Image (tube, rainbow, N blue to C red; front, side):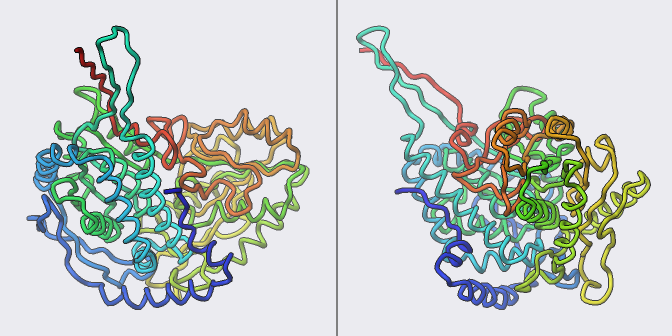
Length: 525
């Protein structure tokens, strides 16, 4: 089978069927609303399990009065049982032929494709993505399933016949699974990233314990249910919800967890990395954020630059690891660029993310609002000039949700906290530069190295940018998002520097090998 990206919205545009897209999504919104308010278990060894610590509420960030469901507040004991079940199921699952594991992932992709609008509508309610972003998230999950399944098939299960030193020997190299993998997934891509990491573990023959972010347990439950329906046995995949201080801590410290896949903040990721490998080396796959720059040179096409920077900075409220948080602009074109960027940002529609014309929905939780308020205060204290935004929206249609304005701040030095730390809110900082060399120095002058972009009509500038930028994902003249929008099988997504611990990228050719260890097998006649 030849891999093809799902690309739902783009296919609709290409075929002139946009209205069908909107009709399907709107119908899904109505349908998923009827599913809200229930109580949901964890699943350990295929059995529904309740926590002795009770439940927590999963509410919508767009309307905090809307209860989506009650989920289990898992304990360390629950997590330990999940690990025990996954360990017990490892032999059978790892012994399942790789072709069958791949076929199960392909069936999962087919099921998700059939239900994509229901999944996207649920995601909009649970994490606040607008319809386009939510459908794209589901598409990416489907792409991960198919890409990794086909990678297993193309690599023949990662088994190779080697050379011969003696005529009577047959030598093979095999990549074999480790055992139990903990998968700790984030709120911002609650289906795509959760799917990518979980499937990476499962398709290679490992078993997995999935612990989603507590802001988005519903999406992870749908992932668990779909994988199980497609054929993953209950012993191979566990679903456990609850705080990082209990469930997460147990997964990090449990000696029977052989590998750890995590996406989240640098502080949490590095802390987990240190504890997880404290007693002996164990593999960890971790993507830990970015402070992503876009350079706008004097020769930039301003139409592309304004569109790309606005979309990269404010798509999903800046709550992407790849979000554009710094724009480094040549002094010669800075006034006209900023004037157009501010006007474009003013046109952003903020509101209920299920709305057809809404670009920017809510931020994920109260902590995000606090971070936004703190960052605005720090910027003002540092004598930054707020060109647009800076307010939390609390009245009228925004009173029950967690809405903030997209914000552009100018005048802060490159060394300022706003330009060095990842805030994960819709704040874009503008930094002036005098030519590309200074721009590259500023761009690389942070500890992160995830994504970066440039706008220039000079091919030499673009070549120098690609040669010198310290980032795992780099774009030139990308109007749809200057640092965002990596596609499975097209732009492998992974960082450098403190954005990663492995320097291997999701959706690329080298990702699955991280879930495997090599064994040499030699037979003599």
